[in-house]
Amino acid sequence: MGKTISEKILSEHSGKDVKADDFVIAKVDLCLLQDGTGPLAVKQLEQLGIKKVVNPQGIAVFLDHAAPSPRKELSNDHITLRNFARKTGCYLFEIGEGVCHQIMSELFTSPGNVLVGADSHTCTGGALGAFATGMGSTDVAVAMGLGKTWFRVPQTIKIAVSGKFKPGVYAKDFMLYLIGTLGAEGATYKALEFTGEAMVSLPMSERLVVSNMAVEAGAKAGIFASDKVTKAYLKQHGREEKYREMKSDKDAKFEKVINIEVDKLVPMVSLPHTVDNAKPIDKIGKVKIHQVFIGSCTNGRIEDLKLVAAIWKGRKRDPDTRVIVTPASKDVYLMAAKEGLLETFIEFGATVTTPGCGACVGVHGGILGDGENCISTSNRNFLGRMGNPKSSIYLASPATAAASAIKGEVTDPREYL
Amino acid sequence: MLRGKAWKFGNDISTDLIAPGRYFHLRSDLNELAKHVLEDADPQFASKVAKGDLVVGGRNFGLGSSREHAPTIIKLAGVSCVLAKSFARIFFRNAINIGLPAIECDTDKISAGDELEVNLEKGVIRDVTNKIDLKFAPLPKAMTQILGDGGLVDHIKKHGDFKIE
Image (cartoon, rainbow over all chains, first blue to last red; front, side, top):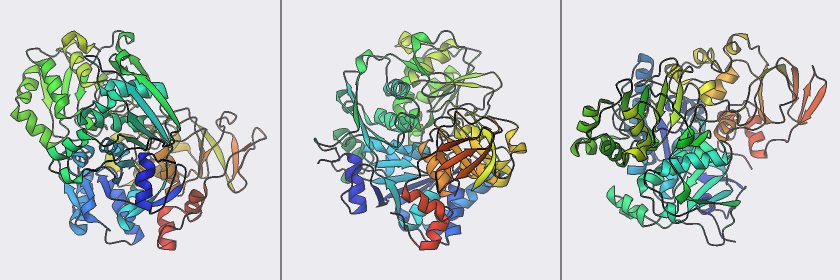
């Protein structure tokens, strides 16, 4: 019997021939912590009495959720993490360097890796053919201290996507549609594997969007087979030697296969307050938008910013709508500066912030007021997510969010392409 | 045997409702954070919950963030057990890791304020108020082993390594 990508990676990392539903103890290649979950992981490691981590070169700590810190308590959490990194010799990414998932993809994650992160969107790493999954602080503390963790090998749902994306429709729209179809728990405990010509033809920036949002359908992992796109991305980031082929066997056993024709897709919007509350843009009606947020680990990449700049060039934001742009990493920020995108953003009337997660997670840099609506390119619209349970979040692609900033209401991006 | 009063919640209780992001700065002060547990789902909960009480949810309880603070502050508030029709994966694993039993069962028949008794070994929930018994499937062995040791930290401390099967 052939194996899925998850079964292959977890067999290799456990030294056993495993299949879906088996419990395994598997070696962990990479761990990530951020400033929301990291301090608790450090505390749990202390509780365990473990002073050394097994593989410091495979551990990265990110100061990204409160960057720069808006409060003394969070500044003190940052001190805890800086000290931890210094003491253990693991990597530390300071404020402004970027969102953990973006940097993990740029610098660390490779096909065939096991990556565990104390952040639910760690599944982003699946875009590179890794088995990447989100866990809690204690799990990651143990993984750092022992170099391994336990898994139940997931069943895999194959998402076979045919056709070509129409203009104005992106990977984000596809994921909102898929999550709307599967439901917020439709893939709980499962891995999703994305295949078919529409997925194979996606550039890495768009694959990262797809894998990032797998957790919003409840999935443990959202995986792509590695291929020439993976190879080119690794090369672009100076890691070509890390490439290896990673794909499911032809006779691998999938729990089920879901076929989707992407040609039929239109821009999608998730309405408050769940991600699976997704509707085609022409079914939304008139929704006033007070704040537009372009950024996050889902859609803060240079490709997103270029698209947004193309829509905004020569136009002005609606005077009643404020706009926040947060590049996903320092590299993205720099590229945006060098390519003149920042000028377009500023002329348009947007506020550009330090790379990080602040607005998306309701910590700082974009907290909503009572009764306000935000259209966001992030991955979650749960009640209270952006810091205020009396506000509402609409999720959409960067193009839809950009178009909405011009009109001050939810707007079909195809009007501006 | 766990015993307490039921606090009833609906479907899709996210970690943003359990441990709101606006209290992010309290994450290293868990007792303080616990004063805000489930605040956006029921503002009365944190001040009125009594030791031993149970949180009873609908489908997909704990969806969202990996923040282990969510089950931790539910436990710190005195809750003995969380019942739900289904759990989000990371929340479920976190609950077991911190020693908070999370049980999947049909919660429709439980009403807010019902007196409940949970027998983890036998897999039975007794709704004393309604005089009904609800059965649940026992947890997978790996999880009962971790839970039995009091959570993942105690499991590793006790055995020096993973000892799950």
